[in-house]
Image: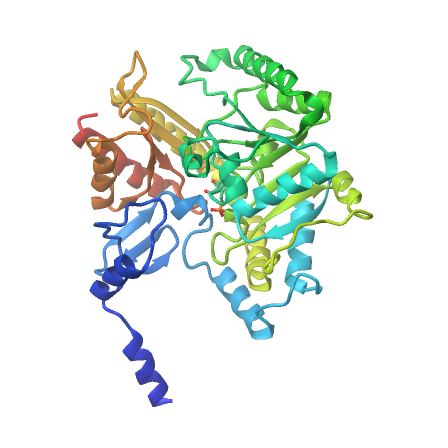
Length: 450
Ligand code: PLP
């Protein structure tokens, strides 16, 4: 036993070794590889995590907007351990308690039109499989998705993605068509223009569908609330109108709830905020809060019934991994038993009013958007013209990076996209913590001369 402990000790790396091996042996996502100096993390608890020097950070983006229940949640950790003691893996063709339970739980949270779940490893392959299911069900091939969207970085999901992260995949998959998002602020519109704007956006989309040939369109894929591209919240009337448009042409509506789902907006699924029922829902992130990776496609009973007599040509070795599903069961139980959705909704009100104060106080804050604990702060050169602080796709002077560095120095960790700072803390955050953290954002913007 002592020998084992000694061997274990030998494996412990110093902070410097961890950081240097990270740079030497890892290829880090979405980064130029030279000169990276990531924080080496020691441990996490609730809203916070600590680096190896003991500095505390508040996780104001819930990592990649997935750690909805924060760090170190005992119920999830215990559920994973308990499942690991029984068996860690059994293939998707076997019935497994955690997989069966999670599918049953998820269907119970979805609208009554939903019947079954196809589990995946994460969000990108959830979207890929949703597209396959839509094509198999409708017999059509075209897929519409939006420019300001991120649906994952694998080949198919990367082609659904509309923003520049899709460029390396071009020329891309034929039949993947893009349309514009309802982005009122960037289009020079105001809150009072919502219904009228929705009608105009949808009229343009209807025209586009007609030009593409409605009988060839299998599905429209949207992020219900656009996440990484700046928390773009659909104006009133937009989603019901989109649902009606899909029905008119027999097109399936796929809501990507990978980021917006599982309480982020104060509802279990974001589409509930507008009272619509999609045909397929893709999810990941908050279903396990990142404790073990998992995603999936929720399928309406009608579409699921199609596969009673037709082969579902989808499959992954790790579909419904027992450890991930055990984490998922613990998470969804925790959401219910600890009033997490209510907390997201209530704390969301505090976040919204703190952000509005920041917008009023800072000439460089053009717009603040939030729904539940999902927010973006849009920085501009001029409030009147709404000219973005950094031009689209470029930040040659590293202005946004410098703001993030200021925030990190104050212990406020998040990320930015274009000219926007994302604020999406764990759904367990308190009002006091929000006040403390938003004061840091206020200070950092003042220091940056905004
Ligand atoms: N869809 C949305 C809306 C996302 O935000 C993301 C990831 O950020 C994905 C899909 C891809 O999920 P994953 O990284 O788990 O493949």
